[in-house]
Amino acid sequence: MAPAAPQNRLAPYGNLETAFAEPSWYNGLPSPYYNESHIRLREAVRKWTETHLVDSAHEWEENYSIDPATYKQAAIDGLILPQIGGSRIPREWTKYGKIIADIKPEEWNGFHDLVVQDELSRCGASGSVGGLFSGISYGGPLIWKYGSKELQQQILPSLLDGSKRICIAITEPNAGSDVKNLATTAVKSADGKHWIISGTKKWITNGIWSDYFATAVRTKGKPGDPTGISVIVIPKGPGVRTSKMKMGGSWSSGTTQVVFDDVKVPIENLVGKENEGFRYIMSNFNHERLNLAFLATRLSRICIEDGLEYAKKRRVFNAPLIELGVIRNKLGHMARLVESQQAWIESLVYQLDHLSPEDGSKLLGGQTALLKAHCSIVLEFAAREAVQIFGGIGYTRGGRGERVERIWREVKSVAIPGGSEEVMLDLGVRQQIKIALGMNSKI
Image (cartoon, rainbow, N blue to C red; front, side, top):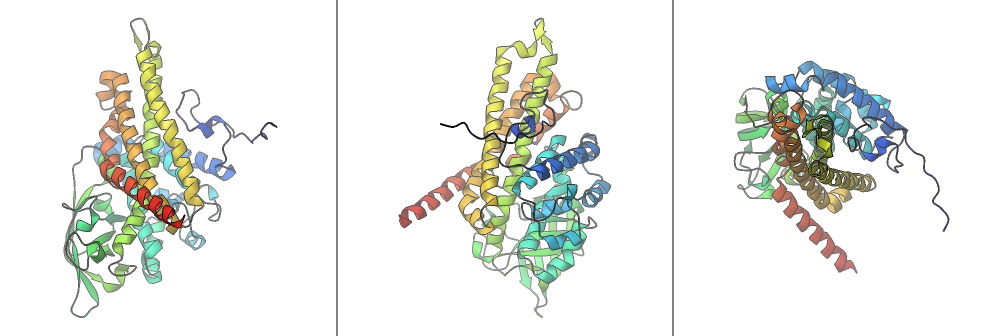
């Protein structure tokens, strides 16, 4: 058999002195997924993260808020448009905002999205990343995918230039992963020109500083009926009350309780068709779950990176901690899990890039749910093991174990949003069984 043709190897990049600190393609190994534009993007986002996030994350967490100027800077530097676009960026949007590293819209794919989320997450603070980008990442796509042209023209320009902010408002006190149980109502006014909206939303990321709320409401039926759900964009104004919630972690994410008290909204603020919102929301969840998988994977790498570096420097029993087999065993288990899920992520991103959005949601929604659950489970394991390696320092806010301590505190802020692990595992199995039965019926 003839030897395989040599592949172009990518130039090494990043922290190569610490094993497993970077994805394998950063180490100069061949990859079929990345090209020059991804390399250029990686460098630009890493520089931005080190300039604007790394040194600010601790301060923002302690202040329970992010710096509004940084959000505006993200728009100026071209990081907002990629957040709302995900794996596809329409060219017409570039008149409202730029793309970082001057990537062309037609070049942009799911691996550019992966690079952006991965490099931003290197700050080691899910609260800071979420505080800046969660609202636009999950609220914005509902408008550009399903909103009318008039609604898009009204709202998207101010979102893309960073002058306005948006969040997605789905979760309620009695409706989390069970979206169809939501009870917030939207009733048409007597003249048919407005929606009158009443209800309470909880755990709404970015809600405290949002100008718009892409809100899941009930326009028909009772809680438990998925056919009566719609999405309406609610501007902040009379009848909208927001209050910041105190969470166990991710303090700078702006987690909020939002109360709508007979809020009057133009009928044109309906996103897509009335009573079709459940389908829109389910499709949008796939994007959120994929982003959370990207975030969890980089945070897990940080646990390996910081744990390994500490183990090399810390001396116990007259030898470096890394010379203890039990410590290498911990790091080995962390590494095997992270490296395997990196491969799963890249495979899934490739498949999504080569399917239509509709087919991707239908055929890979279950896989995405399983991936999200897997990545959050691995993150919990990696954070726990890293804290064990650090000992007391890993349980102390600030200092050498700062990132590990914060990640351990933030694990559930990755595991719960977008659907709990239990719901994701069940959904993934049910979806794959459904697909298998469909394929079997065609044989």
